[in-house]
Image (cartoon, rainbow, N blue to C red; front, side, top):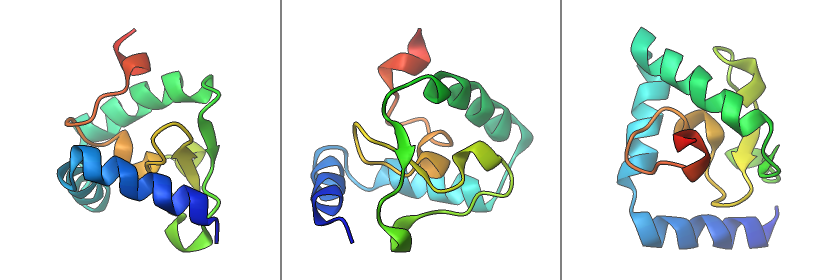
Length: 98
């Protein structure tokens, strides 16, 4: 297990709280067409980003059958699980706004 990644995840949660994670998790488990469309639009921005990386902690890696390019990926900047991050509207990446 990558302990540094785990500590960075905790740091992010301490800054923004659990609500973005919980919203993304809920939307991942209860897909709606409009949220999935938004997730794909955001993913397009993530694909070219240097922070689009593999999740180093296997226990935290999310299998994503709906959008396979998110399978096992995380944001290397904030350490968030991308399958959840792109499906929430509370923690918005600057790159999504461009």
